[in-house]
Amino acid sequence: MKRVAIPLVGIEAAISHKYGLHMNETMSRSLDTAASHLADQLEISLTELARRVPLRDDLLARLVAQVTITDSHFGRHPEQLELFSEWLRERSDLPGRSFEIWSAGCAQGEEPYSIAITVLERLPQLARRVHILASDVSQAAIDSAKTMKYSNWALRRLEPNSRKKYLRQTGNESRLHPDVAKLVHFECESIQWRVRLSAPKRFDAIFFRNVGIYLKEEVLFEIHRAFARLMKDDALLLQAPSDPLPDRELFVRFAEHTPAFKLRMVAKPAAVQSQPKALGLKSAAVE
Image 1 (cartoon, rainbow, N blue to C red):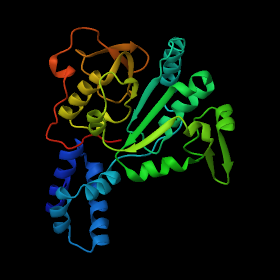
Image 2 (image 1 turned 60 degrees about the horizontal axis):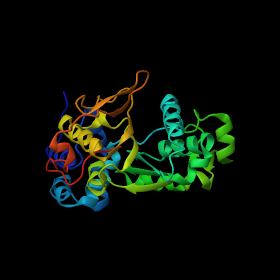
Image 3 (image 1 turned 90 degrees about the horizontal axis):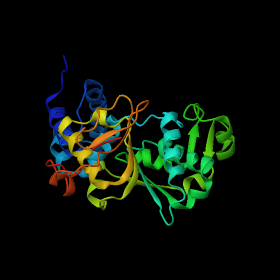
């Protein structure tokens, strides 16, 4: 049975409320350690930290970065990258069309950089028309992504030819070629914050993988509804096999072999066409 110190209950509640997280036992243990370290750094008690956290976005951000998982690797779910590249190829001749891609919960950049490498390797003529937004709630993860440096472990599933072409090894790590980084723009923000900033029908593809499993059901429901508003009519939503399925009233399967979805092209409820509910959150969602 999970046992949580009284001050941590308040901190958990603040994080869950703002980011929409469903705090499991592993995350609670990570929060326990992170909160203790932060309290020591600030030279205050856990009780005082619990009092400050709901009032300080910077403290909340530091703590949530410690309870979310930022470990990933290049080339994850290769069947989806293949599907995405074929989807893109079919639209490559559309005159004047640019492609807006969102890596929602990008961790340390492995996913958006993998998307960029896929474009450069298979459809280099489209590179100038592809723009990848990569967002995560962890500033540390975003800062790490911007260094473009990765361990051999993070690169273990990247195709050898792509690794040789787009990375240069120095010691125990490798650095990405600048051409890859040119396709990606990073932002430290929550998913719901980006939802509020984005115009309807903006995105051609949303990579939302290994994120939904950490969110409360009602928050995930609203995020999927927001995605339906932000996706172009022929856009793709790509999720991980472990993620909860999106609302069947809004999405249908695009492929049977992998969790890829497209919009169900029927009259949408008014709530989908309008701004999504805030759920009382200033921002919500995590890597």
